[in-house]
Image (cartoon, rainbow, N blue to C red; front, side):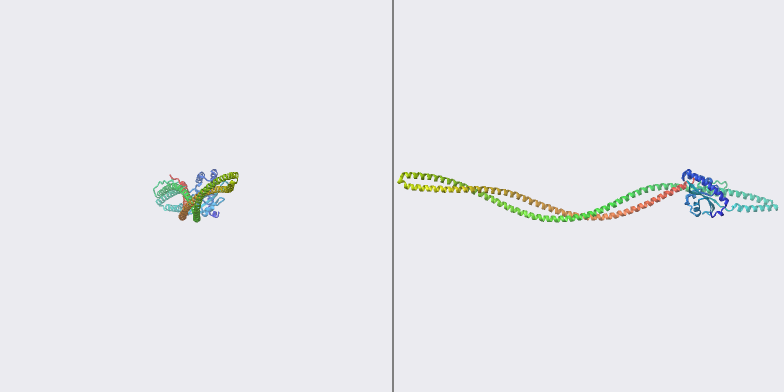
Length: 536
């Protein structure tokens, strides 16, 4: 308490007792209401007002200098960070300070800590103005002395009428001093009442002189302040409602912006995926193009091979046709051979028949020769010549019979051989016919193969045409894909721009939302400040 030696001890002592008593009641209010609340604030205000008396102010400050409650509502909810204010906020016991106020006044500030649940929670500050010599003393005492001297002089010189005039003048001056003191007290009380927030209070001067007109002017100021506060309060309510609506709208816009940002992010991701897919598709199309080229080459090679096969099959068909024609001719020859052979068989049979007839004739001739020999023997000598003839005929018959037998045997062998040959020829004819039928079937199959090869060649030609069309279509697709890639890249850039703009817009919306929230807090604080003033 470095300035305490310069302070009036009696004033400091009385003020310390007053502020400590008030602080104890404030602590009781805090304990009753379990800390600072609207109810405890109202009770603490009443306690401070009750104990204010001749003090200039009571202010309940936090350790950081913030004025929680002030008997002068105009000074409430501000930080007292001046050197004395910081010292007062840091006290741990009752201390007094010399306080040169920023209004030019000089005060004695006595501060004491306020405890809640055993901990220092606030500091209660009190202020008393250090007044100088009153103007009543400055003017009244010299005037009274002069008046008294004048009256004494007038009495001594027996100028009683002058003494009477001076007495009346003194009475008038004393009455004027009384009226001034009354006006001063009323004015100070009115100003303190206004500072406490009771703006409905008005002065009611009886006189309409300069002092009365000054009170009227103060009433005008009070009425103007009330009107301004009402308009500010009404405007704050309207602005607060608008701020709340704006806050709601901003929240909706922010939610929409977040959804838009999420949508833009999805679009961006989709564009990236689409770009990736298109890039992969372009690569796949290039692979397909390579495969199509290989297919086209393979189809061309297959067409060449099929052409060679077709030529081979066609030549084979021609050869098989020639073979078939030869086989047909062979069958015809075989048929002619069979006919000739059958005729030969018939002639052999005729020869066999003739040989049998010759054998019969030979047998009859032998019988005749035998009969002739018998008759020649009977004839004797006459029959010798005939006997020789009969003997020769007998020999001839034997030779004929022997020749006939040889012919018969030869014819029999020839017949057997020809029968065997006929069967072999028949088998060969049947085999040739079967071969001819097989060749006909094979020729048909070859024709079918040729037709199939031709069909396959046509299909391959169509396939090759389709491959060419597919390649053209692939080139068009590739061009379209490249164009889409360009558009997708541009779209991705645009999406990035939109995303950046959306992010910037979201940041701006956040800034606006914070500003709106700050405005809400400010207007709420303003409303609380305005509620401290009592206006009708």
